[in-house]
Amino acid sequence: MNLVSGNIPADWQWLLWLSSALIGGLVAWRARWGMMADQRNLNIFLGATVAVLALWLIKAGIKPGLNFHLLGATALTLMFRPLFALFGLALVIAAITFWHGEYAAFAPNLLIMGVVPVAVSWTIYRFVDRRLPNHFFIYVFLNAFFGAAVATSAVGFASTGFVALSGVYPLDYLMEEYLPYYLLMAWSEAFLTGMSVTLMVVYKPEWVATFDDKRYIEGK
Image (cartoon, rainbow, N blue to C red; front, side, top):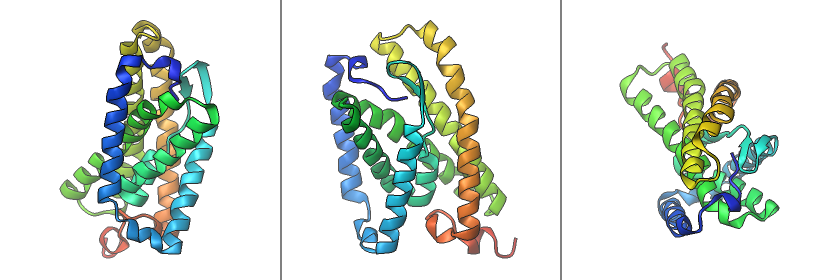
């Protein structure tokens, strides 16, 4: 879903931008920027961000602000942890915002399609990491497949609630013509994320910051 400026009530703007600014401040303050001094890390991050941008550009829509596209948020979270995942998604959303000129939509798009899926993905990862055995298949299926599906579903519910509360489209219409298809798309997100993460942890485990082959593979 890519909100357009016309979908956002004017009196919501200050709260949305304040929330986005707080998130941006957290990323700027807590992210380990020194990691990007390594040219290899920078190239991997930029390559992954461009790949996610390409996913976002492949979209379908039914009405203004009601678009369907894959997110890539769970993959970024597993690869770079939440702060750099948010930064990567912010770059993607900024590029799309400037391309279409929908500047007022940047803040809500960041919150709904950036903060929500990254927070859900990271919560699932932390739960699995702390509560379940360290095993390759547990990591892949729960963090990548399941995590991506839940994160995408959460975005569907969040965007439906936002648009309904803003009064742009009635809730009945969204429940019938938008949310069910977003939930179906969660399976595509799960498959793409699961396969991508599986290939990376097998062939390029150093690309995935949350994966440690000594913990998840050796001795299992």
